Amino acid sequence: MDETEFMSLWQTEKRPEFPRFRGDETAQAVVVGGGICGLLCAYELLQNGVKDIVLLEARKICGGATGHTTGKITSQHGLIYRKLTDGLGRERAEEYARRNEEAIGRFRKIVETEKIDCDFIPCSAYLYALTDDGVRRLEAEADAAQHLSVDARIVHDCEIPLPVRAALCFPNQARFHPLKFAYRLAEILRERGVRIFEDSLAIALEDNTVVTREGRVYGKNVVLCTHYPFTNFKGMYYTRIVQSRSYVLALENARKLDGMYLDCEQGGCSFRSQPREGGDILLFSMFDHKTGHETGTPHYRRMEEEAKKLYPESAVRFRWSAQDCMTNDGIPYIGRYRQQGNSVYLASGFNKWGMTGSMAAADLISGLIVSGGDDCTVFSPSRSDFSMQAPVMFREIGDVVANFTKGYLEPPGRSLSELKNGEGGLAEYQGAKIGAYRDEEGALHGVNPVCPHMHCPLRWNPEECTWDCPCHGSRFDETGKVMENPASRPLEQRGPD
Picture (cartoon, helix red, strand yellow):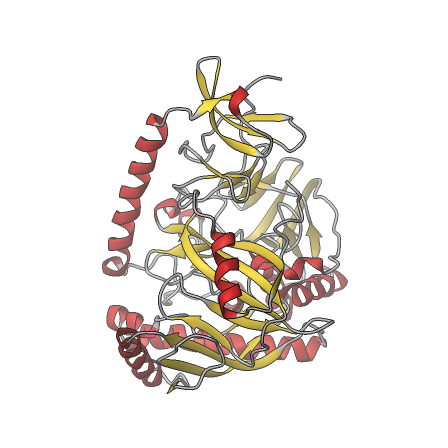
């Protein structure tokens, strides 16, 4: 498979390079994870007087979720405010809204102060409805948002080519080029003394010491910003976070939009324009499913068909998928990771809203490190809103059990000799079941199709040529190399040499 086939629009940007971590070091703060969340945490710590910082990234800076986002900076997070008000009360819902509203302003301030050229464009965000039931839910959401002092209003005029009945408009939001912003921020951090290391996978955390395969670094404070927590057994985060995939097309010759648009129904269409040399490009997104599920669905083909209906003159320039951590109650985990001690902090589970979520995490965690105090916030990893979390948690536990049972009982689909070039899946080899892929040149790649995280059977994803875990969302390329955590080890090689 061509490694650029699923490259995002953002990843054409030239990235800065950083060395691999080797040896042993100490620091006042160790940030694990080099996506936008980790970079912002390091930046806010610097701004608050913490100068001795080490940042470790398992692969390349911003090569994960940040490089596959749609780059929306917004406090409009779907139908969230009515849910939070009903489930947690007005005070907690108000805190969630305030933190995310402040995050938008903080992005604007950093862009202006640091003079970062990242196509930062103020705009409105719209949540739209195509049905009468959707309109009723938008009206309830508008009422909840307004009671939380969020500027939100119902409108009926929209730019998108769909029969929109009404939309909920959030003015004063923004969009930007996330990697132009993040790459420049990484360079600023390096210039100001932050020690950034790439290709430095954290494999363990022992008494505030982050262990990598080539060294250890002790931090007075440790901040985990690794998308899915790389250490997730303490606190049982594997039962509290579900990984979800969505898909994006970048369309040329499509109408430029001033606003950002999202369907109020799960899995509906999302639209937003991005300036680019040669003309604006439209980001068109559809579909939303748990990782490792719907592996037989041709998502990109179906999206391309829908895009042609909506924009007949358009052409696909880029296509990619995104993976997001979804919490059981729809609220990120930001604060002390108490099962690891009072000086280890967690930022995870941004529920597809990683831009404002990351900024809120950076502000909250830097404040806890510098000023101390309690983290009894709506985001606390130790929160006890069991009534909101329980329904999803029990549903997901049932799904994990079902996937274990089905996966281990599923017979191999074919023999190795039946695999054609470019095909993969479960196959039989010497009486055993293996995962196999035959590349376009005919070379065979065989693996043990079991996730090393918690031994869940994997599923072959023919659309992207990956092995996906339907239990906790780890993903591996066709050769078994880790693409998405929580797994930290590659798949065992199986089959003929």
